[in-house]
Length: 90
Image (tube, rainbow, N blue to C red; front, side):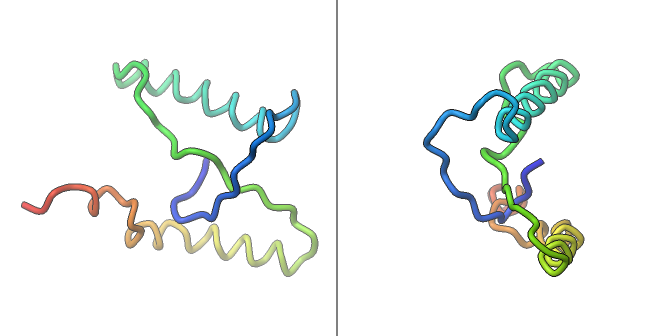
């Protein structure tokens, strides 16, 4: 699942069958369908667009990614895309 605040790079080519992009797109489509059935919200968006793909080249890179993942839930509370910033003030 894509995380808020990620840097994204646009892809202008179609993903090939079996590629990570195709796998992620298929997963997101299947999960979205089930969530919308459960919530009775047909065709409602569930995910942010895109996802962050990164090749882990060494242990330092892996540790940075682990730290990012561990900190991300706390960072979400202050993210400009957090719903509390999108709702009008009372």
